[in-house]
Length: 294
Image (cartoon, helix red, strand yellow):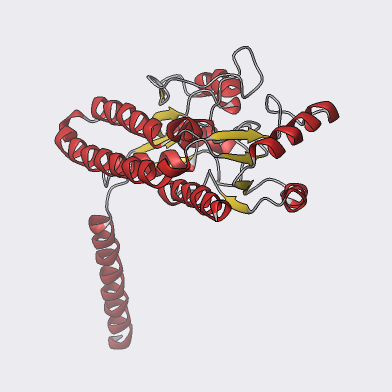
């Protein structure tokens, strides 16, 4: 009888300890943060600098996805249902095609166009206007995008406005400093040209007086006649570098660059480390131009 009583007491103590541990864990667990959603990783880089520790920021696209062909999955739509705001880039193909589906599945979701206020480049892609959707490849555009994000976050969480303002001001100063650095680095090489398969660096070229020579015509593979015209332009312009984009089949472009005697540089414009990617583009142009001048 004593043994049974002792056993019951032991079990009771163990259960009490377990229950206490569970309650302690629940008490100490931090509440889940509200969620903000973006289309691509470079946006997440900017928005996390603004949102700080107040929100979790999620991207719909991975760094290796094609933003012009991507179709949101069921899991992506579920992710958006949890989000307070969805920040679209602006005119990316998948956004244009999926807005109706997103609005239908997430009727209460606030959608913010981060390209508002940006002068869009025309004539590089297909469609009625051929707007270039790659606005994030410009530091000056990124400052506008960041301001649009800041304004929307403040509306969503006004009680923390002072916090977001400090975060945004720090980011804006960093972006302004980066633009100054790039301007100084590329000033000696204004007028230089570079080759890239897909016209992803239109805004970067516009900012620093460079010429982008894309192999694609309106976002499509060139015809033999168009390709010949491109080759004539390349030979006449003397590009300083040939950019190979991560996620695209690069072997044909690498072979073409070798044939033309143009140094290559690999870039990844959809990776999270947006600042480093932009610096890599500038460094490759400066290095190629300096080598060519020798």
